[in-house]
Length: 208
Length: 186
Image 1 (cartoon, rainbow over the protein chains, first blue to last red):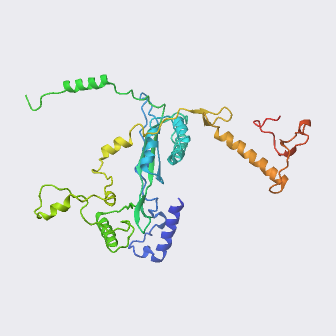
Image 2: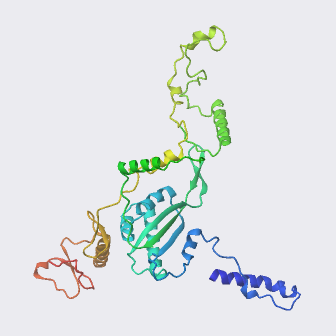
Image 3: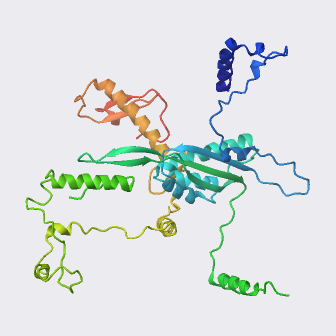
């Protein structure tokens, strides 16, 4: 907000000496108040935009669509590989269980993910019409690579190496409802059944 | 004495190696070969069939060459092939490397926060720590400096409490608040 206003004021100040109303042939004045200054925070990421989709109202007979909340944190000073282990840990858990696991994890990223989950929970209750804050589960949880910076690392004898300071992003999608039951592990019988089915699906191609 | 060097490109590696070689030749690293002259001969020479047409005189010197300790430094372990991403993923995502789900988390009966079964509740511990810090502040006010601790016991009394006959010779510390429920009075 304040960025937009300051930008507009700056633009107005800049253009006040130029006086574009003199340049226009017609008598209409250049409306300086509605200059769109693109001083928004660089680029709004795709994950943040996912919260903006609006579905059409549901018909009376349809089953209720569970609420989905997308949240992320960018440029966390942590490695994406190490963050992935934490993201893998909490995938598919209910939000309470995930918070409990993260609280007693010794990793640096656990604290960050905990904050993100609490923020997302609060957002869900306030803005996304979620009734019970415990009735959420983690549908997706990802770690992505942030911007890396190369720096000099000095060794002995005047030798040096280049090290990269890595950062990561963390994305989470909360869905209303109890967590889905875990998939039963694939048995040999299932694999055999699938194999037989594949054999049965074979047909002749390019024939009459 | 192996120096680990991280280089970003093969050109820089070549430049670095050339510099190192130059330094060695000029004798700027005299300690490398332990004072002896650098043996620039072949590291290992075995008498074999005369594949190279160099003449008969060379075969005599060939078998007597024993690789000294210094050349053994050169044979270090190095990866032969680049590990593909599939192999890397198998190693990084192996179940032994994934984080385990902890099953020893309970709810503290006092405050309702989460706690691990074999450890104290963090919230309750912080509460007690804060109270003991304030008691220590009171003690410091009474003593007025270091090395003034009396040789008698200390009793902490809260608002509205009187010292009993058991606390006859003891030092009394007053705290200006209600007695907390977890601090049981004897």
